[in-house]
Image (cartoon, rainbow, N blue to C red):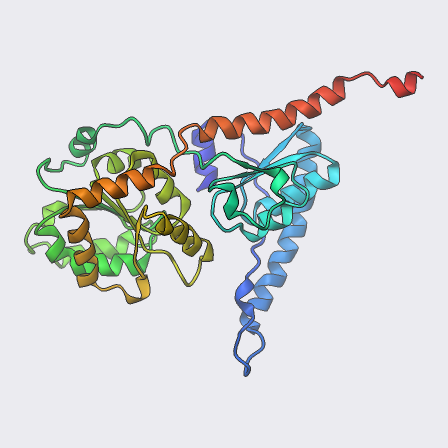
Length: 353
């Protein structure tokens, strides 16, 4: 996906090999010390990381950057190691409230650590390096009027709109509950559903069997909304999704009442993201493992049936928005790079002496 997005932006893209470290190979039970199934993939991916370091060294030597910016994720580890080996300063950005493994490793060498949540959330980072900039939001998210979204998705202005998103690949857990709840939901609301590229085929097959059910014209499923996500958010009266930073940032930018269903099994950072916002009363959080169609409908009814609750949630999540995050982050990276550039231009007075 990154290759497509970067190419669409007109930027050069240089791929490298990278490996993911699976930390779920240890078992807390006494009968089983480790899970053999993950040892092989971890060993193979370690070799990919070593390969990626070599590729990154060649790229950095060719490009000769003054500064490297790393967003986190396992693909950034070999680049950060190569930058360290070449003495090139780098800035990392941690979007989540809980730092990922790569950023925890790279933080010891980073010149600056930009963070997406208030700095007090990051106890594992060296405080002097931490800079709270927030999380950048795409420019096409803000500034779209609700009526533009309503018109684009051919919705009815008089009925509330619920936006459901499980990410680019989708979340089968959320999708299953939504499908089960459709009869009750569509009787009162309109749904824009980003089901995920990996799930949309299954969703469409299910819909082919339910075409004659009432109000199915109010249901609008999609695989992945990239260019149209700003319009979907503008149209939405309520957002439902995982607790990834994209969902949180987009909802915060537009002040949308939000229900988060974090992925407890696969992404601990989502749990912490949801916890940070929930403590501030900024979102409602549901446990996906226990969620039923009736429970989801009841939560939606509670929010959309109470204007005061909508106003409260909107204001609370809006407080997490940092409209200048992209500019502040860019400024931070440039400052580090300019410091390096200035040092390169300084005359070597010691050698003259």
